[in-house]
Amino acid sequence: MIIVLDTNVLVAGLLSPFGPPGRILDLVLSGELRLAYDDRILAEYRAVLPRDKFGLDPAAIHELLAYIEIEGHLAVAAPSKVKLPDADDLPFLEVARAAQADALVTGNIRHYPAPARLGVNVLTPAEFMARWQVADSDRP
Image (cartoon, rainbow, N blue to C red; front, top):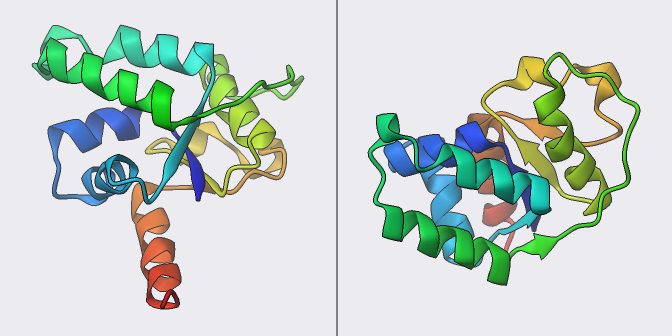
């Protein structure tokens, strides 16, 4: 299953490993989920994760980003004319569409109004985990 993780979910997963964002990150790191990304998304991850306020280990950040690049799904996304409340969110939507991702997981669902989603399934971490658990129970 391929997903796109908004930066806020990645940060939340690193800071609080026991909630839905942390569980999603566990699924990524175990290979159950693949992250779709492009250079814009990686650049945002690289800019945000090292911020002092998060207190994350620089070596761990480096390892995580290297893992995403190696094991993730590099997508080439065509530009979109969609207008979102925050234009910085557009790369996540474009990559999800280009990668035919199963979901774009975000903590800021309001930033992706339904009419502008380009057919992408946009879910909160809790919604994604609820669907994952249902799908997982159907697996042998």
